[in-house]
Length: 464
Image 1: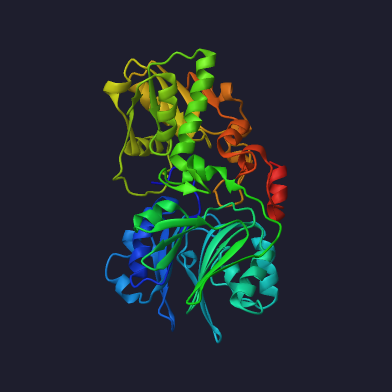
Image 2: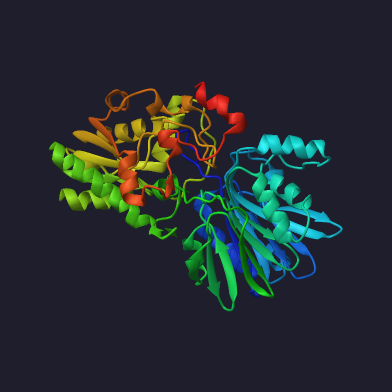
């Protein structure tokens, strides 16, 4: 289901090098990464002579529902699951994207967003490039194809021209390349299994195919997998380490470890910090309820420190299909009730600390609080395991303008009154730095300190 108040990350990538069941393992890994995108899925493989590809709109299980995997031969593969931000949800934007030329073919799968995409696209079109999709990811293929030297040289030159967030895989007839942007905004890790290698947006997919995590790909690094072994280089000396904080807060699965930090453990620490603040302030409550699923770890940490029962006050229906946002308020409210329901016997008469990961437009928070109070909750105190969202993201999250962000225009007390909460508190950026490290994450959506120039988006941000 698509809600009008959910955050969405753009996609997830997975690759396999030197394994007899490359396509099958990639397929199962895409299931483990399905939370990162549900609008499209695809796999490209190489048998050492040519590339093969199958992709389509929908979930991985919908795209590969027959014998499609049997028609993807070879020991090397890359796969992709997509949620569209740049380019929209159209068939030609489904990845992997492929390009064929006289010197060989390449396929690419990209996670992130290129902020200077419009500038690059215009320049490439003036030089004669013809684009077949509206996705910023196709720019990667064109830049590589126009490069000189070895494939490693071409990829390095392409990366030096791009600004923004990109973790991508490139597959040729004989090799696979894994690349991470110079700030490390999007995660990418290497695993080993059965004499081969895999590369994944999250470690949960590495474990899903019973591979062993080996290491994270570093910011600004290009890793080449070939029959000669594994080679690595950095395409720039100007590197920082700023993984998107929302990967920990919301996007990644709790059983993933990103840049050395386990997601569940980090979320639990955020709950601990919120409980410590409320204990100091003297908040009185009866139970803690986490909004499924990304807030359950924070709720566990809060409940432990506050010495309160951690109750299942909200039940998530896992069998609701994806739908478009309905046009009326009544239909939107019904859509929320299809996805979540209050556990009346648990919440009736209780003072609840409700834990959630973020507030975007406030509409979903309002509906959840209404659900709980209609089920008899005496009080609902909303606690958000992240700072207020004040600025849009241009690195792969679908927040395009400040107008969408209710916290940018309303202080917590006024917002609490609007959504029906008895109180509302957020964590601060300093709390995030305490959990993740001062210089290890990007907090641009909270503090407006973007890591790159925003190019065409600059005026849009500063004038809203």
